[in-house]
Image 1 (spheres, helix red, strand yellow):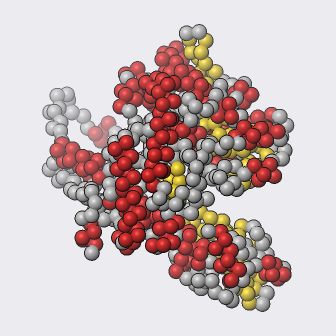
Image 2 (tube, chains in turn green, blue; image 1 turned 90 degrees about the vertical axis):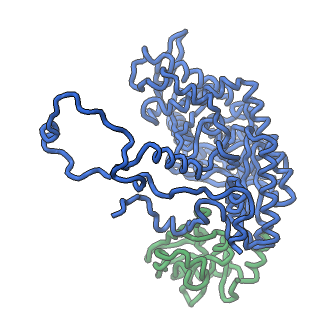
Image 3 (spheres, each protein chain N blue to C red; image 1 turned 45 degrees about the vertical axis):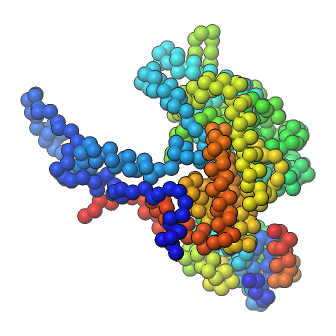
Length: 127
Length: 497
């Protein structure tokens, strides 16, 4: 449920690291708690995101929730396919349900994120 | 399997035609025979200067009995507080006494126009002034505007008044503090008024976290918006300490009045230190809501804020009533005088019950909620388990963890038991929340019926979880595709071609 090659933050986002560029999405735990996702609002390519600040929002049949960026940098790619098929986030949170790619401005921020093991322990402590 | 399950509990699906009134009847059907013309006929073309419609209007062609059956059928498919218990937490879906409807249909009220001069509107103004006095007494806040048309509108009005007050004192300030248990309308109101929202977490007992509040308070803060009792149905024992801390930095305290039904005649928000509150007449004072209202969200404020209220307000001068503008009024927030028909109904309710009756209503509402909570506490998790006010919040976390049954499934299955589900997934701070408000108008037998339904569903969740995943089975329509409804809304009827 929590792929070991990803890093996680306390707001339930994940990042996949590929050099200076990371892919960001929300965890399986997050999509499961949101319920069926009906709408996603994401930044545009070229926008700047800041670690800890909101970068968009996700609306499910239950609620609207802010998305918090785990990293800082420039958005270099956005998953436009989510526009027409937001439920992809429920179906494939770590794959086709990815949200944005960010060119890191401060790679050291990654050290502050959790491993899969740590994230799982974090979820257990929240419940 | 499904067929068999469909025959489980109580209500049968409503039967009958499923067409719209436009698709009912036939072109030959008529409801009335128009009398023969007994004046000279005139040319439509001439009278309308050539603007006569060229194609027929697609009006329904039906007989009287077809109309009667059509609407009786629709009514039979409906579920409302007249058909059964409606335990929507935070909504106070109490019964709407017929006496209210009697009062609002009095010729003098029903036939009047909002633009009539004050001299011929004395009765209406007397009613408005009397209602304002009653709301001032219940809230402990002396100045009242009746204009806002709903609770959220009342919130907006009050924060606009706060802004005008702060501005007059030299600084409108920038932030408003809201606990994380608040209604979503609170932060929406704050944004609409140009303030920033500062959210603070609730403490372990479900109240305002005093340390978090103190840390968030400074002279940039314009107000705190607080619901007391809050959306967990819990009265905050630190309330006077909270409002004192807010006042200490020059900020104002706003009470979201959605939960007034718990404290009428028992505790007054004005005495708790609140500077303003809105009151939902359509909740606490028994006027119809749901399906569009209309509602009314009067705002009560302290003397210090009275000069900023929307105008005009009805005032009494001996036996004569007039309309006056508060000195620094923020202006009108609603056309005419607000939803007058709602005011008449609410005032009828207040006069019928009297002070002692209102107090008893709150006592009964609180007793009913605590009774249901005690009946359900073993079958469901109770995240904040202390005596509640008029509502309480359960969690379906256990059902979800152990049986893969979500709160949504529980709610849908309740429909098969003939019960309107409670509020679900609110407040957001409770996982798989189930928020129940029975109100004072349910009998012990009806409370027990609801409890039995909740207990049956909990047992079904453990024994046959798949049964809940497919529910409901007995309603006119089965489980709806909410995702598709949001993504591809089909909002308009089109005639069959």
